[in-house]
Image (tube, rainbow, N blue to C red):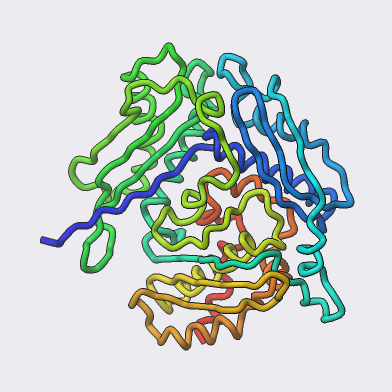
Length: 386
């Protein structure tokens, strides 16, 4: 019998306070890019009961009524009723924005070096990952966790209001073959769902099992073997949620945003940052490269590390790691990557169409694994095959 190892990933709903903060920051980014594609944005949001604080740096030629956009986003997510203890109609909005530091801008703005001279907006390292476990070329635990949260939100918004509420978390544990690292079965599912006080724990468990968990599991029947352990609202009650219960801050769910802990993370958050910030754009590029490597059949797993110096266009390093699954030498894969991808900030922005307003959607169910994003395409796989 195969030796088993367990791996767990979590996701959160769009009504989770940290995710709501991410969406507000990315809403502001999208609105600023809509009025000026050259906007430089680094915005963070803090949410607590009755208050949203928007702070950071913005340089733009356009204008956005930020307080209105904050309240609209809060209402759209589902906090639009005073009974919830936090709602967009009554939330105060405090705005503390300033221009981007000229010391940063001088390294990022184009110069006489040519039209590829745009430097990186910060130093740091970024990781991208792909594997053959799912159709999305994502790890199985985070993929199922995200789909549970997407289904939760879909059901909640379609059901009557005296039912489930916006805040929720999912957690999925997968049993893997310890020798081959292949997923074998779903071991445990945890789902905590905010709900109306009139609902009992049994009511919530029935709603969640019938309308969220079981519909998602139909997609993954090959991994449903034996008795899955379920924990729905394990504390028994979850009526107080969102920013009323817990302060939300942009950038606190970086593992949820990426690979659920399955691959390494460079440490930089994404939401609220325009694509001149390589924290975001280079992480997308690294995912794009890793996904195309796996799609090309060059490896079963691929992790890409990129590193940049602030104000310098070319990455200071490009590393390819395939965890022993490569079909050709890693050095050859790295050579093909460097030959076929412009990894300067301007090159990445053009390749992935990153000046297009699109970012609020990334702040809902992870930044990776969703076909609508340009960094999820596999149109470079043929080039990498050599």
